[in-house]
Image (tube, helix red, strand yellow):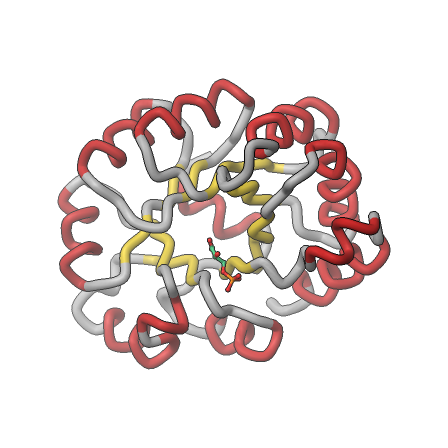
Amino acid sequence: MNAEDLFDLAPVVPVVVLDDADAAVPLARALVAGGLPAIEVTLRTPAAIEAITRIAAEVPDAVVGAGTVVRPDDAERAAAAGARFLVSPGCTERLQVAMAATGLPFLPGAATASEAIALLEAGVTAMKFFPAEPAGGIPYLKALNGPLPQVRFCPTGGVKPGNAADYLALPNVGCVGGTWLTPADAVGSGDWDTIRKLAEEAAALR
Ligand code: 3PG
């Protein structure tokens, strides 16, 4: 799988913040059952690495990745835990080299033409566009597509059911990501049915 293949797994990548690794497997099963196999577990909580380990071991139909990869050793830890892709909200040369060294597909973050051009120089054409809405949203992505049509983005940050389909209609958007699929109250109470339904709605967006 290369980074462009990530875009074909599903129109939406759930961005997951997990406080309790025990929730990881039932949560992943609900998302997969709803039609969203690519799951980005953010390295923002102490439970994240254990959550990735468990999903990788116990939910074979999930394609679990690590998000919020911001330090070179985050990339190594996530790969060792069984992550199958890496996502970063931004990028530096060191981070890009560390993510590439894992051999995993990765989406480094870019929010300006210069950041995208720096990644293109390193041979990267698939990127996260973050933070999508505050950075300029749909008109901004349309403008980037003029000079940089070879780049495809996964916009995240403020992407919601109300605007996701409009993002997905852009030629330079491969998929979108967001936290709306896994509301904290549903995850906390183990309401997997609600999460499966949110995933079903999102999977139907394209
Ligand atoms: C991310 O890391 O992609 C964002 O935190 C997701 O942002 P959202 O909560 O606006 O979906």
